[in-house]
Amino acid sequence: MKRINVLIVDDISDTRDSIRRLLQFEDDIDVVGEVGSGSEAILFSERNRPDIILMDINMPEMDGIRTTELIAQRAPECSVIIMSVQGEQAYLRRAMMAGAREYIVKPFTGDELASVIAKVYEMDQRKRDVFVNLTKVACETNTRNAEIITFFSTKGGVGNTTIATNLAVQLASTGKWRVLLIDFNLQFGDVAVFLNLIPKRSIADLAQSGTIKYSEIQPYFLTHSSGLQVLAAPTRPEYAELVTAEHVEQLFNEVRDKFDYIICDNASRFDDISLVSLDAATQIWLVLAMDVPTLKNAKLSLEVLEGLHYTSKVQVVLNRSSKEMGMNPQDVEKSLNVKINYDIPSDGRALVAALNQGVPFVTSHLQSKASEGIRNMARKLTSSQEASTKNEVKEQEHKNRGTLKGLIRVFGF
Ligand SMILES: Nc1ncnc2c1ncn2[C@@H]1O[C@H](COP(=O)(O)OP(=O)(O)OP(=O)(O)O)[C@@H](O)[C@H]1O
Ligand SMILES: [Mg+2]
Image (cartoon, rainbow, N blue to C red; front, side):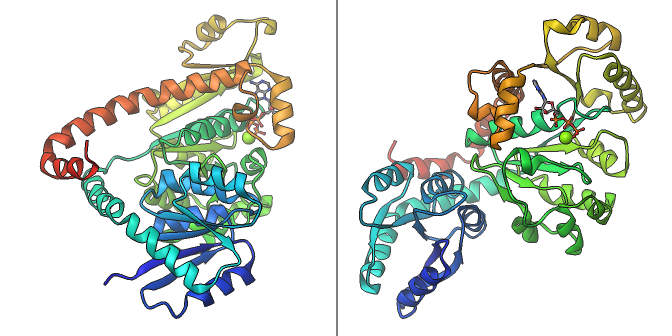
């Protein structure tokens, strides 16, 4: 008989130890991992797909409810059992809504825990079988590479990081897309600050770990509460030189087929690192502001990009557009001989407040015109992907009619 694989999630290591001890004599249960945070739980579950996840509710950074919600999206075949203390009834209700299958109140005995695990495992057996088949179908078909969007500007402070982080969070928070945000501003990258994440490891540590392999990358990612994965910039400017163009190339090779969108924030200059990022990009988003020095540099950048044969990948983003700038978007289009593809209005009040709270404005200031601009941006970007996904699904449905018929029978619709 197959043994039940269990992951323990609790921020207190003594608690994790005692749960592990409670289960150590159960013949049909294997504790395959224990982690101390929600973000580690998500990464572990995506990678190892444990049958059962024992989840603490109260954890710093990301609580057990949000973690359960994200696991339900990203590793839906895993069954979550919430471990709570008396008096957390309101939380429990929310946890069940988030996708937990059962709960157990602390303190519990080994027998009680083993019997809840066995019950949930039994209950979800059919669900797991269905997912094994679905995963097989998906693996046979899902060879599409990520849309890689490289943000670029040739003048600092025009809003690269602001737009890259908010777009990435907007895409990830829908739960539909696997999104990775990489901070290639290696000396003074501030993506982690924008998202209030504390980088324990950065791209520099990854580069030092030897040849970059996807199987070893995941501990270097930070997980934002939107579900976004982030590879942060080095924590000190002098570590920037540890990362070479070759590392960046290896990184793209390893991650491009693991995500739907890879968003890259770059330093405002042409150098080894940004050139690899521009080369790997499927779309280069040139960010402009409405001032003469930025436009002068943008003109030069467009010429360089043309020389590199990247013109067909370039999309133009006008940031901080406002009627009070002494020029309008048409003037910008005329002077650069380009079409503006995206337009984000200026909203200093909302943006500064969000930045100081360490939250993306697209989630904290929903009414802001700038948030509306980001939502439109995400909608426009994903609509083409959604259309092609639909076509692929149709083709695949045709090819896998036999398998899908079986799955439809199991689902019963
Ligand atoms: N649409 C906007 N409305 C108001 N303020 C904005 C807007 N976009 C960006 N800003 C502000 O401009 C400042 C610079 O933005 P940001 O750090 O994103 O620029 P950057 O291009 O990444 O700069 P750097 O070259 O330093 O990396 C920030 O304080 C940000 O809040
Ligand atoms: Mg920046």
